[in-house]
Length: 252
Image 1 (cartoon, rainbow, N blue to C red):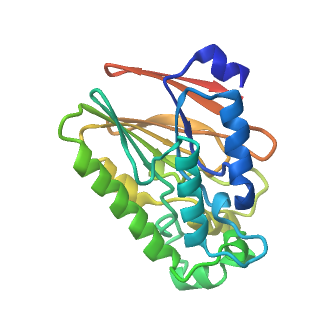
Image 2 (image 1 turned 90 degrees about the vertical axis):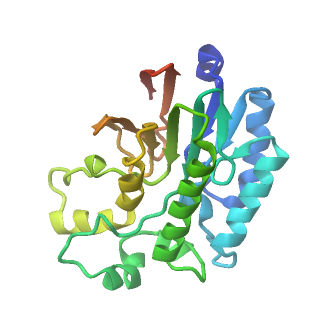
């Protein structure tokens, strides 16, 4: 919190995996607003935010609970409510993985059916909607929000939980089984969103998370960064963006 007060940002954006148990969302927001009552704040959910440890609450109900709780604490639910600030558009989505990062030799249906053996989303997310349908919903909503708000802005800054650019796909760490690593990547990316974003010349920055590994660079003419927060090791990116000038301070 002292870093937030020191930087005095115009906005704070939570990029997902904000609260491990959805039941604690209200307590989390209450504590946050007690410390930071006045800074404009927005949020996108992450996959962990939608987990149901008791396997008794569907993803859609948890999503709706987060959306309503955001409103209660004056936090913009960026998934559905993009922000226009002068000539800048801020928009975002959880993204969800669409298996576009899977190895070509692997079967998508196999990865969906066996997800619980490789990723805990398969054990703790309950939904009548499959991954591919949910990913498509997220993509369509994001692109719709951009189309509806881009006319009078010059720069679009996009925040996604799931990384959307192929440049963010990292090789396996030393000693890690390569096939297992690349199979697990199936649950970490949505390259179809990135493909659409790169077509829009107004998109200047894409910030993502989810993979617990920091990286940054350029894809075509778009700057990107992935916040490297991990379990017990939080990280924040302080973004200075003014009239096309960009600076990102990584604070661990």
